[in-house]
Length: 178
Ligand code: PRP
Figure (cartoon, rainbow, N blue to C red):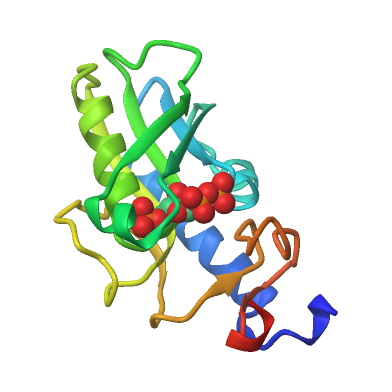
């Protein structure tokens, strides 16, 4: 059962850290007319929904869906495919990309390149989790919730083969369960 998975980050710690990130974002975007949060589907949807409800800066939410080519070989090549674009133009906007996790960093690097070409006023990145031991790109992380070791994590939006996404905490998934 999913509730037997070893906890890496508790629900309380997630709640507290999301509130801190929201405070930091509120402070840094104070006075901005509108911030556009772009959630990267699917993994970010729970983090984003908690973050957005803590923010007081005027903002709206967009979603984008990408997929990395699944096997190890292409993972190394960093190929990312756009499955669904945002609905409104990002030109002239303050844009914050919201991710659940930065692993190799290829997804975020791709999105930064994609969005930069659309001439936003500003473009920043926010990820709940970061695995620095796995990251192969130079992409800048402006807001990071937790730095974690190289373990497979699930819960709070993150899945393993679509399972465990809705666990309320972040758990590590032991090898025998993969
Ligand atoms: C995960 C995660 C990030 C990406 C990070 O998405 O949500 O978008 O991988 O990996 P990277 O830093 O190595 O590029 P995934 O492809 O598992 O899809 P999902 O969010 O729909 O589960």
